[in-house]
Length: 90
Length: 280
Image (cartoon, rainbow over all chains, first blue to last red; front, side):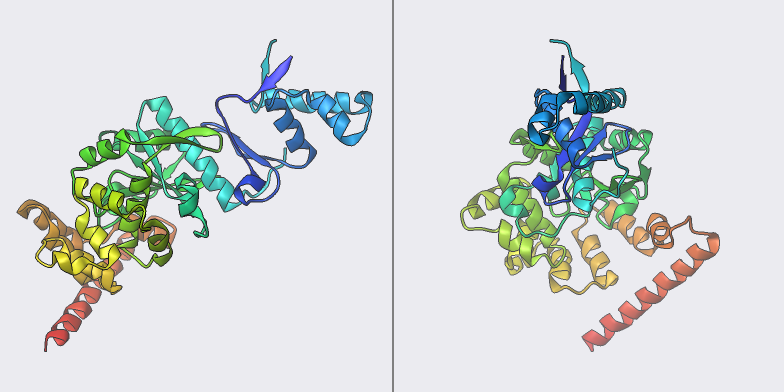
């Protein structure tokens, strides 16, 4: 299973446009803008790039997959439920 | 996810994307102008945009406003009340801020629908907030900044846009769009158009003197026919309800309107006295 960015989601990476650090996104046309900061931003960006966010975070933090896996999975699930991420069946 | 105050730059980027999404849903053609829609050379060291500016295909302009209202935008001015040029409507979005929806651009004399076609034909596509958005071609981006600069003090825009390598293309486009007088005002060559009906209007803006009497005189003189001149003359005397509401932060009462009307009449009288004194 991989993830992708839904077409209805617009986003900016703050640093790319000279704004605050983080990812700022909105589900169009009627969603409320959200900010993903720190690890949350890293997970979302990895997910829409088709990278396994859990493996990515394990590599970045040195934590074990057993520790970060459930937390990340829960976060990804919440992003899918709010329409900020979509699941691609491989 | 964190509920935070979004910075201005972030809001303007997301707003452009949202406007494009809503236009796409309704099959409306939209060109993104200014702010993040500009080429990087034109954006450099430019102050952050405080709103998102778009130019909508004129025949769909009212439909576009209706779509925006349907998605929670609060329309604060109509095209007619938005400015003396009646070119843009202002709308407010509670989380993303201001939009200026243009149906034409002041300084372009070609009928709005034909002018849009010219700009649309040579458009290119960029991504704003990772959404595909159409933008005018490079010479048109520069011409629009120049025409905007002709109405105010935007020396920085003038400097960035009016570069030698683009000047021939900008001038050619200005001819195609019947925008030579306003461009001349921006480049300091307005005297070449001294006999043109629009001369007085652009001379007023170029002078930096913002008395309304001169602006209205210039606009009436530049009117394309007597009916338009008569309509402008009438408008010059009326209080702009939408602007008054924006200034007060609430709907104006009858008393507010009456006071504003008296204020407008006094200003006009003062300007007339000033004009007469200038002639003595």
